[in-house]
Amino acid sequence: MDVFDKCEKINEQYRFVKERGYYFYFRTLESPQDSEVIIQGRRVIMIGSNNYLGLTNHPRVKEAAIKAIEKYGSGCAGSRFLNGNLEIHEELETKLARFFRKEAALVFATGYQTNLGTISALIGRNDIAILDKYNHASIIDGCRLSFGQVKKYRHNDMKDLEKILESNKEKGKLIIVDGVFSMEGDIADLPSIVRLAKAYGARVMVDDAHGIGVLGPGGRGTAEHFGLENEVDLIMGTYSKSLAAIGGFVVGSKDVINYIKHTGRSMIFSASLPPALVASVSAALDIIDEQPELREKLWKNTHKMLKGYKELGFDTGLSETPIIPIIVGDSMKVFEMCKLLFEQGVFVNPIVSPATPPKRELLRTSYMATHREDQLDRVLEAFAKVGKKMGLIQ
Image 1: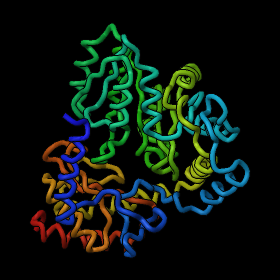
Image 2: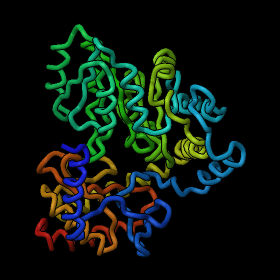
Image 3: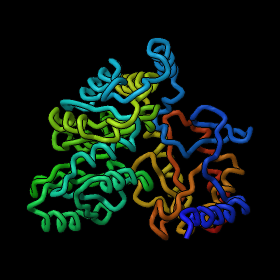
Image 4: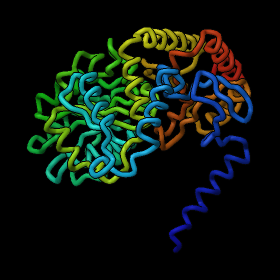
């Protein structure tokens, strides 16, 4: 047996899809990430981005990045643990802690590394990580790197969660949950999770990658949305969504953050976040704080699209956020719809198993504060035309 045999097998699968014009991964964008993008010289409406507030192309964000490069250069040439800890890293941590109303924050180079480093540091041999089955892959991988046990409960099923807590009373327990689930756009039942955590002596960590800038009166995410900021122990987030860059962070108590800072392998053994990205995030945080009208526009667009899809007859699942799935239930139909929509000038993401359970294959659409009314109308027109052609709607 050759260790490379598996490579040819998967390449055959991709060739099959490509030959039929259904390969929609690694598409090359030739423009900024905005409400419209250019692909293969063609301008299309982008409804496949996590740029919820439209800040990746904001003048203040770009200016902050340029100034940071002029002052600090392009990179840090090492990990924060040794030689790559800049003053702006610490300034951003102070700002993040203040924004999320926690004692301390820790900055990582990516959101993925944040979950890997945080979870693997905290879950020891006698501990148990308790996950929602729909949690993000980075949470699952962080658990795999730990020495503890992992238990999964059925999606947003609080009875199933309580069974796991009941049968693991004597262990250290960390419940880890997505605030907003990234594929179908529904929100975690955080009030019930917090209540059960208190009853069974568990801690709570929320991965709020898709909630920050979106939920809550101040854009602080799922915990603020439910008025539970003081009840959630750790909030993790990424910069690659509303915060307009790349990277990640975790906020919590000083003692816990300091422990992760000195034991989180994905931070200690990775080069630190480049100055331009740190400055971009800092500027984006200021804009979120100062311009609530962006969030208001995002929700106006979200409500318009949820209403529009439902009126057309599409299945949008349990979505209640700017992530709106169009559930198709068949992989090849998903790919075909993606192709037809692109021909209509709409960029959308095809999501098939294993990224979503079998029979839940879907088109993942997501919306921005910067989408114009006429763009959204064109999207609905395209979906109506394609949906009828595919026999999904009347």
